[in-house]
Image (cartoon, rainbow, N blue to C red; front, side, top):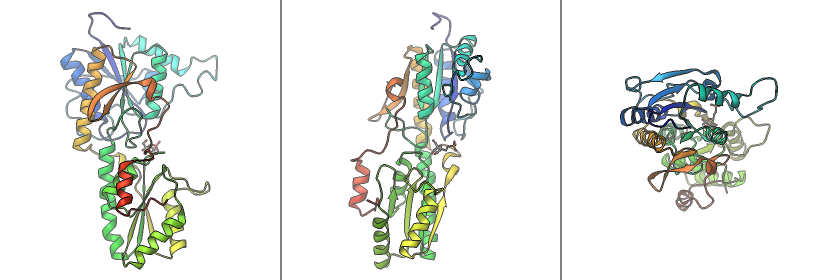
Length: 346
Ligand code: F6P
C-alpha cells in the first residue's frame, strides 16, 4: 500500500487502558515522522472507535509540542474490540470492514497502534486483513509478550511503591497488618516490583498459588518476634473465592479471622495509571515512538517495537498476538526475595 515518492501519511491511535508515557510515544512517532521524513500525521480519536467513526485530528510539529510530560493520552482511548461479535447482523457492514474502508479513504500508508495485549491482537488482525500496521507496547501491567518492558510500568511501580512506603508509618503506629491491592490484570509484575521496592513482607501474585495457612503462620511468627506490623502486597489477579469482590478485602478479612491481628486494606486503583510519566518511561516511550517512525519509513510493517536485553528492536505482531507475559517460574527477583525471607504464600 506504499505510495512511491509521495510522502507517507500515517495514523496514530491509542487504545485500551491508559498509562503514563502514551503522549511521549505519540510525540516520538509524530515528531520523527514529520521532522525526519516529512510524513503527514493524523491522530485517530478514542482508539479503534475513531477509525470506525472516521474521527481524527491533524497532528503537526507544534501540536506535538508540550505533551511529553502529560499523563493520559491526548487522542483519547477506548476498549473497542472491532473483531468481537463481528458480522452478527449480516446486513450491517462490520466494524473491521469499516476500519479497512476508512483507512483507505483517509489515504493511510500505515496505522500505528499504541496499546496493550488487546490492542496488539487487534493490530495483528488488521495486518492480516491487509493494512500496514506497526504496534507500540504500553501498559502498567508489563505483560506484553515479545518485549522485556512496556512503558507505563516504571511510573506505576513508582506510584505503588510510594503508597506502600506511606503504609509503613501508619501500620507501625497502630501495630496493624496492612493489605494493599495492586493492579496488573492477570500478571503479577506490578505487585512483585512495587512489593519488593516497598519492602512488602508478604507478596501474593497470580503466578504463585498461595496457601492461607502459610500466610497466617508467617504473620503470627512476625508478631511473636515483636515485629509491630506487617505489609501484605496483593496483586489484583490472584485467585479468590468466586463470591468475593476483591483480593484486598478478602485477604484482609481472612488474615484478621485467622490471626486475630488488627488488619486494614487499601485498594490503590486508578491512581496507578494517572499522572506524569517517570523519566525512564519518557525515555522508553520516546525511543519506541521514534523507532516506530523509522520502521514505517523502512516499510517494516506487521511488527511491534520492543526492548530486548536493553536494545530497542522489533518483533512480528503474529508472535505477540493472543499471548500474555507472566512472571516466569524461576524469576530471579522472586528467588532473591525468598532468600531474604519475603513470603509468597507458598
Ligand atoms: O491494563 C491496565 C489496567 O489498569 C489493569 O491493571 C486493570 O486490571 C485494568 O486496566 C482496568 O481496566 P479498566 O480501565 O477497563 O477498568
